[in-house]
Image (cartoon, rainbow over all chains, first blue to last red; front, side, top):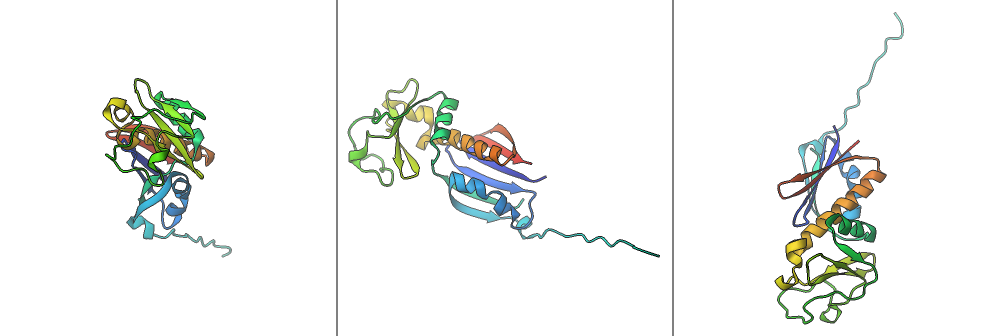
Amino acid sequence: MKEIIIEISDDGEISIETKGFKGKTCIEEAKFLRDVLGTELSRKLTPAYYEQEINHKKHLQLCG
Amino acid sequence: MSHISKMELEITSLLDLKEACQRLGLTFCENQKTYKWYGTWVGDSPLPEGITTEELGKCSHAIKVPECAYEIGVVQRGSKYILLWDSWSSGGLELKIGKDAGILKQAYSVQRIKREAMLKRYRISEQKIEKGIRLVLCR
């Protein structure tokens, strides 16, 4: 499942975590939050960021 | 997991600040141009960026906090809003809105995120965690 998890501490500190996204889509998906909340202080990329979406090709047998 | 960002909050939506006040039981006083504070700058903490001592006590709007002698000033700077308030204990504010107004900033962030997430048709769940609030957006 694709999720964006935001934790806001009682001190007002905000962290945004994306889960279930592969590749750069996570950065794009959370952009609207970064835009409305302020300045990004740091960003840590996780292993899934470097994974690519796999395109599955189907070969259909047309005859014989 | 894909990435984790840490953010520094900027208050840009007066509507969400008003709703944050409502959420916390505070009174947003639109166009109140002064806020109550000690009244004299004693230099015991740094001034917010871009604010001079002459500007203390003046604001664009103010926030009243129940059972507190002092108030919070909301100062407009372009498209952003700065919160000015006196944390001296006699004013009572820090006890109610947290160190560095963290509780008020938290409530504002929750309102701001929920509004934008709803526009983008996310399903939103909110839960209290040990030292804060967690929002989960999914679709």
